[in-house]
Length: 455
Image 1: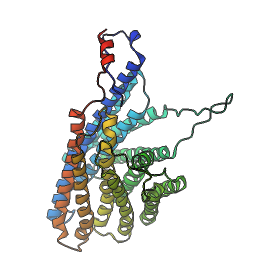
Image 2 (image 1 turned 180 degrees about the vertical axis):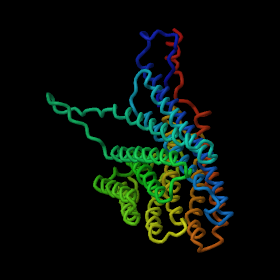
Image 3 (image 1 turned 90 degrees about the vertical axis):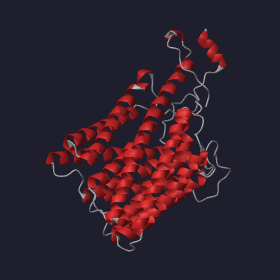
Image 4 (image 1 turned 90 degrees about the horizontal axis):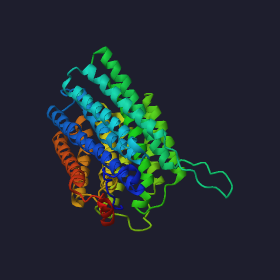
């Protein structure tokens, strides 16, 4: 990344070098992205994973969900999906959008304040129940407004038109396949936010419970996991993995088939057709692995500069978790009684697939987007991934055994799985935070520019 410099506020706007103005704008965008990432790390580590670990300890101690309020579990999930992944997606989305003048910070900062406040209020209301009817309504409203402001900003961005033959009109731009997948995931996020708003207002008006009813929550989780997380990760995988892993570009036909199957499965799931939905979603998951050519030998050496060389292996492990999550959801739809199989299948999807992808690709792209040359520590990157894999493996394998009464010793395994995952999350958060705090900035002052600034 080229070195750039801040604009001296003492220099008159009319005399500022246009290149320096662009550089300063990019720096402000990078700083705004850092704010989004730090918010995501906070929700991931404390309201998300730490609360999830304490929930798991309570469940293990009582050998079941009976003693744990459903609102606590839903508060943990909300902080993880919206507070962590949602903050990362919105931050990267705003960073990727072209912006001019004050809009570089004004709109992202407004959305940031609404989003962070909304997620924090929801978590607080779920855990403590203090004026929860008001907080539920405010939280859902803030999140809804933030997402629609983001969509409105994104809709202003037009794809560049390709040049046609001499004397002809420019060729109408076509949306690339990876963008279609990301847009589908963004639509899933908007649908989930709207779903959450309607249900929060309903609960606040009835005043009966702090938690979504179980049947409704099952539909909501399908929308969050398969409607939002999966297509977004697929889209970024199609965009970045061919370059990072030195593999072929995605197979368009198979990738479209995977997207169609995923959308059809989400629709079936939200309509309550759980068994049909799981079969269709699992089929789409398998199709995505082949569409992305993850099983083929790379054409050249993977690009692992600045990150741990195990990066390609963990990307493939993440998609292995996706392939596990699909069949486990089918098993759950046909055989689950006490929630253990459903919980394991969702854990394989959210932690095994989505979190592993974030832990693997995050150290590669987040420093660059945030104006830092490289991640703070490649060893910490490896450690976070290993801890996450061991913890997730124990959780997914032991949860069905424990909850469904198949093996009592599995209840003793669950706390260890939670401790390992919590440690992995804290190591990842520490690594990214130190990257931004003490990492070598790409916004350094070049000698020639420094001289110009003094003049």
